[in-house]
Picture 1 (tube, rainbow, N blue to C red):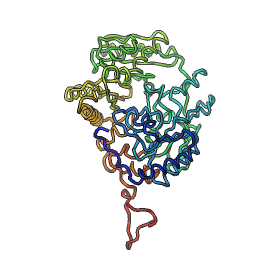
Picture 2 (cartoon, rainbow, N blue to C red):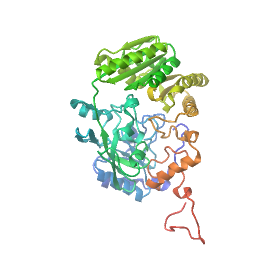
Picture 3 (cartoon, one colour):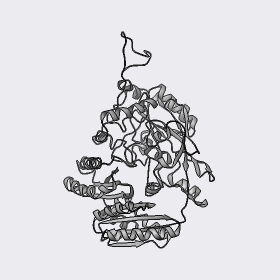
Picture 4 (tube, rainbow, N blue to C red):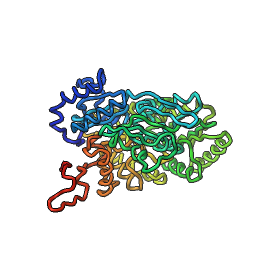
Length: 498
């Protein structure tokens, strides 16, 4: 697994593998437990395929009761658990551990309820993102967050990573579209957070769970907000001679009070790769391309198109095409949605990074990435959720060439350091996982990280859920407290000390 450091496998757990597998088979019978080496290889990585590791055993439960019993057994027997959805995570969040049960939620794939009057859908976590929209579109509704992997990624994984997509600028990330969760704690306890109502009383535990990367609990049901499809939607495809001009146009559009339904940006390498793959009609003589979608009532959209076109021209746009039909609008987006696989056709391997910056810093960061590309001798193709400053640099490398993966990792780390330096953050929607784990101190000091670990301890005091992810150094829960010892007697002496 390259130079990636993961928690040392527990010898006691490894020696009990046969007993653990037998116990899990009694909880999840039939084909719900996979322990053969070759059969487990399909689960050895998520979409961050640079890192691979076989799990101890794979378990595919079908009921909440089974999830509860599996987690309770693991808690009582000190066995680690790594939750997994569809495995599309780009940060290594679902990377297995050799001494951990890989809990795969793909069999939880049913839409349980669609409540149009309350504008919600209740689904199991294995339902795909696009599956929600497909289930409600005949009534004129849709689910707004739309990651590029929406055809495959699961809604449970979206909750774990707080996924976004091209329309999150106007309609928000997963956190803004999830109203309720059912989840199972590592102890096996089943709890509910939120529901169909707008806001819950008390602490915002729903917000805490969204983006928690499988460290706090396992989601078994999700209540999401569904929206009515807007009256009309049209897109502009605008090319620029430089990326800096495109970045300035993005900032000026937002500053002008226009909030597009989506605003995406691609640089020359990404434009050419996408056009060769999809033939969407992208201009090939530009350095940067903006796709700007405006939606709402027809008269409003027509007015906004005029405003955006004027702003683009003011920033030196060299081409501007406005969609005249739904088919043309979808063609504009087809290339953007296919950008990641398209880049895979021009390079043996690539790392897809994810950082977020203030929009006004886009020109500076683009220039910085060009300098880093020259420094490391590796190409980079850029695809951005430009409207909210969420960058997705694709670092191209060849894993068959010694040291290229390490160079790509160092290149990516420097990009993320640059994001933090200009006032941004390490991730927008992919999560920290293992990819950005060692960079957490770039953004958080020791006090910040310890406070976050205390939250982890409140849910999972033994650190059995997805260990080795997010935190560069995981402290035992007892180490974080200020323990008062009076006359040699510690409080709560029955609790094991480390």
